[in-house]
Image (cartoon, rainbow over all chains, first blue to last red; front, top):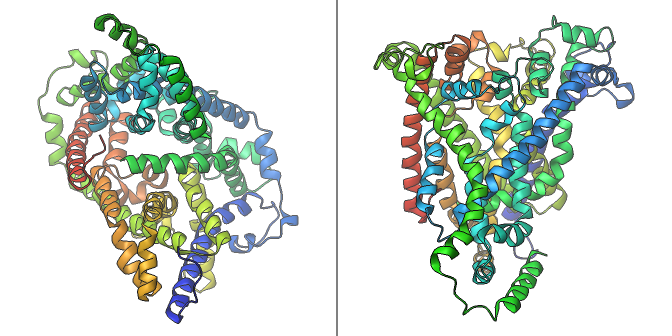
Length: 294
Length: 325
């Protein structure tokens, strides 16, 4: 933008409008999050409306909900399961996505056209829930954590984003190594991967967030309560209207059930919130790349 | 940093390779040596694709069969189009289709304009702190799952202790049970989606805004254009191709109305306005074990989804010269 020239009256109005809109947006973004956070710290003896609860001073907050959740075995177990799904899932997803994306990016690869069609067809045509369900149950993945991440371990969309990143790396770089007689695998490992940190982070986190948040696959394939990841536990806590044994056992006289619900959700979001600065840095870059490449 | 590595690598490679350019290896052997290792590594991904993407396509044939769990996919008896006929002739056919398209288009009409406006405001804002804090907070909800969103919505909308109902009571109104009210529910779906995705969708528009040639604005300044005129005659026209593309992309996924969201938010009282194709497939297929029927509906959705994707990609290709694939 051009430097700060003297603003005319209508321009002042314009910037005022912009700033007011952004402040309103900020409020709209903060209020729901704030109401959930304050709810999670609500003490058991609090009498008043939720609206008043939002303005409860922090020194009157109670951490009872968090203490009872963190002291509860099944919550910790679910957290461990979720972390396992996250790390195993990301590792599997990158291991499967990177070679495929690289293959697709090699210009004179024998069989490239066929390969491309092979990868695109499942992107265009999704046979739906039941055929996938039949496959996963038939593979014996029921009650295995892999059932949560394996069905989504390669996303064609992510593969194509990674492919266009690989293609955007300077061609001379690869060409000179090829002239040296390096194999494509050597080029991938020695030249491409060291230059691909941002895209690996971006795509890895794409997958990771997806696996961390997924409750559908877990709901379909995980029956054992010992293996359930956080989203399933959260959902059980949330839809229980107060009569759920879990909520009662953990909440026993210490924190209101509403606070337990809010606190469980907030705890589950913490890893995402911690990772968020990194996510933001890489994601925005990667997403822009993806969108510009189209 | 990246540039340094690249130049260093290029330099190292050209030093090493300069003497070897003329040496030729027989074409066949060279090809094998060059491609075999990477194909070998990728064969795991290809096997994955075959198992997890192609076997389900093969399984989809149970849409034309009366699926018997004991017989398996291949041995269940053929029933022709019976499953499809049952779906198309049932009363829920139009209801599901209507709800699905309604939510897709509703979300599109709310979240894309909201995202454009947000991107514009962030772009024009001259107060750095405000701009940065809006950006940071606006992207965040995209990473929250719908389970978490549900809890957030409960804290706002619960009839007994939700903040919104407290405000309504304060203003002298009657509390509304938003989540089970057939009039309120569609708004909750559309607005909560807008709240969650607005910031994330703004990224692509921000990228487009950053790409506008600054000399255009300078020229406008010299001509004495006001800020409003700049937006109207330079900024918006410059990003309009991107706006069109984003709309076209959304058309390709019009039958995906957001399973996770609806599934978390809906309940029996609002099924009539909430049920979309995907939630219905889940209930029929997984909960009621009506595999054949659910697969038929899934196949119906899959085929139409593919046609829509092909159309939207064709249109995008026409406009930009390159499509998604």
